[in-house]
Length: 80
Image 1 (cartoon, rainbow, N blue to C red):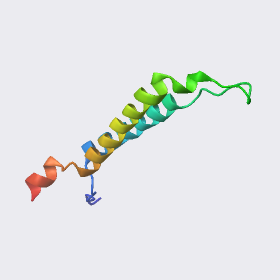
Image 2: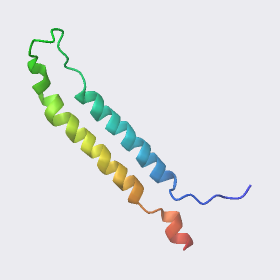
Image 3: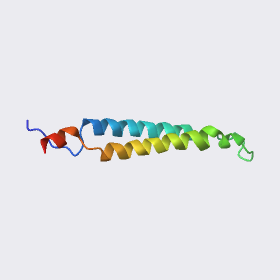
Image 4: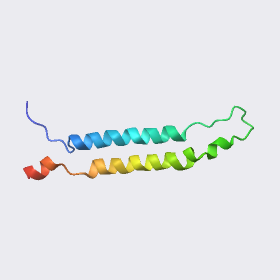
């Protein structure tokens, strides 16, 4: 079986998988806070977890995704 040339190496795929996982965690942290009474106000929507921590975690995931896509493989540098 011939060796296939992929655009990404193993490190890239691992970084991308970690980034997807971190982004999913960020979105899970943002979710919730629904009110049982639709006419009532729930101040839990303004918790620091939802307006500070979750967006930072999601942003870190997106940065990891960019790094995983842009990062160059060491094997490609040596082969060229």
